[in-house]
Image 1 (cartoon, rainbow, N blue to C red):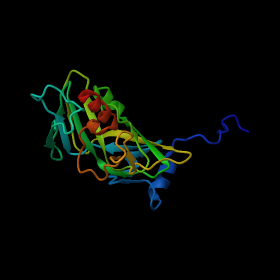
Image 2 (image 1 turned 180 degrees about the vertical axis):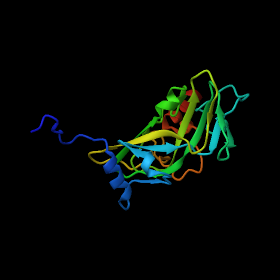
Image 3 (image 1 turned 180 degrees about the horizontal axis):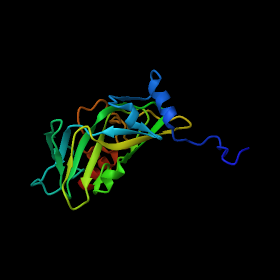
Image 4 (image 1 turned 120 degrees about the horizontal axis):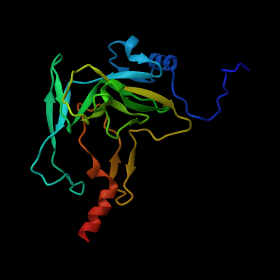
Length: 222
């Protein structure tokens, strides 16, 4: 065996290479990402670059005391802004904005997506995702980017700019598809929908729909 040939243990998940990504994209009823404006530059190494969309949802200043997930229907705290192609969106220090990617994805049930921001933006203090770094098997739709500016200068962001990259891990074994519904252990009759397919925009927080909140509400009311 040559020195550079390292045996791979069986049963481990692996990251898809560029060639494997292209094969999965070319296969029918497999991984789908569209539209890809320029596959030559967007697919490289073991990742696919994703572009910024043109719709931004700012977290607006409000007279509300706080966002309380124990409220059954918290008010919408977002302000929708549409940015034309060629115009900038300014992300100021301390701001948080939600925006869907330009591309839509359809994930097969044997792949897990790993989302990362581009280092060129990170050096400016721009974080592309606050917590949502995984793309579940079976997910369909655009990805919601959680843009925040940790720097000291406003940064101009332009629609269709490549801002993030996604890599794919091959999953061994079976998983529950993202569009499955699960029952709340507190209220079995209440189904929790895990799928927000083909979302036209970025979803607000669904924290108030977690089944644990039913427990906390009951504790508060007792």
